[in-house]
Amino acid sequence: MTAQRPPLVVVGDALLDQDIDGDATRLAPDAPAPVVDVVSEHSRPGGAALAAVLAARAAGREVVLVTALGDDPASETVRAMLAPRLRLVELPLDGTLAVKTRVRAAGRPLVRMDRGGGTPGRPGDAVRAALGEARAVLVADYGRGTAAAVRQQLADAARRVPVVWDPHPRGGAPVPGVRLATPNSAEACSLITVEDADESLRAHALRGSRLAERWRAAAVAVTLGERGAILARAGSDSPLYVPAPQRAQGDPCGAGDCFAATAAAALADGGLPEEAVVRAVAEAADFVAAGGAGNRDLWDTADRTPPHPGHERHLTDAHALAQSVRARGGTVVATGGCFDLLHAGHVGLLQNARRTGDCLIVCVNSDACVRRLKGPGRPINPVADRVRVLAGLGCVDAVAVFDEDTPEALLRQLRPHIWVKGGDYSADALPEAAALREWGGQAIVLPYLDGRSTTELARRAALAPLAPRLRP
Image 1 (cartoon, rainbow, N blue to C red):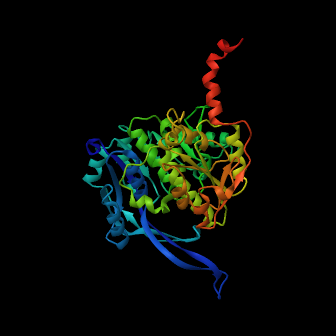
Image 2: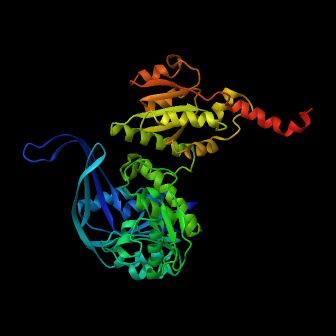
Image 3: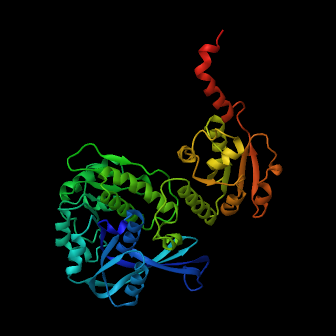
């Protein structure tokens, strides 16, 4: 049982985050300011509380949040939201909990308003006990005093267990001996001046190495947003660069918390910093693609075990991508097939399909579906491998898997503007054409390279070992 495993303890400043979403189609008559017609309002835990929720999804063990909360309504709201997901150990808060409110139109922030804030009190025996039983510790420092109040206990913990420290410009430096510190590129630039004051990987690696030396940290991972992260150690000229597995188009709010929480969970499981960073980069990219902290599904399913990399993750990415592209007025393009042995005909079709719009989503038949359509022995490659190969193509923005004999149900969810097929089909005769007409979508046919097919490739591969014996 996960409850019997030593917990992952998160220490830091909890916040209450609010999103006010609406439409802005006109300016106010008395000032050149947009008028937002409010459609929805949503509150969620923020700061270290968000990091703790994400850690609970990633850790596979109990998560304890050590934070400062008061008697104000915002603190009560955060308590109620966190109670089903993790264990709270509180410091007293003199004042009110900080509340950050974003006003957004069409998913894009227009303004952020901050209010409230208090001073954490002294830690009690419950805080010391929680840190004493920790398997690993994540410090999500938001510069509001919690990490400073617990600094001595954190220094003691760093001598016993892995500590991940996510720093803040207004907070203190990590305690000596942390296993991994995770500043973002802007924070690293503000803390360290290097000869090459640019955004090159070499400059970021040098900043990370010097921060590791200054902080006496085992390693520093400088996060680079959609570029991934670079892991450096003090005095080392061999940094590890981990690129993001996909170019995530979504709300980046909370991506740093996701990165740090995933890394801490990996270290709690005995992983090396290198393994932790690879896993954290992938999870942070998925998190952004799925809508970031503003994704409502995060709060509906926060206590469930997250899916392993596979077709379910890509399916979520496809929905988020289609919604995002439509919201900004772009054209969503989709295509489908088994893609069992990817060949030049497939690649040409996918490249041409991508050129017809602003994103390309590939709908892939599941293994069971391929067996029904192609017979025993197919697919040659399982769906996880087929998805990974497709996702690695620069012209493919997302991949979704469907189990039915046709992708009609999936298309009704994605609602692409254009559905592309290759070969000698007639667009009107495609079985998906009727479904596309329901929302005004269009089916088109693109030319296919002659003489390329998975069946022919498989036949030639099967005959290849026999070729010497078949020669006259």
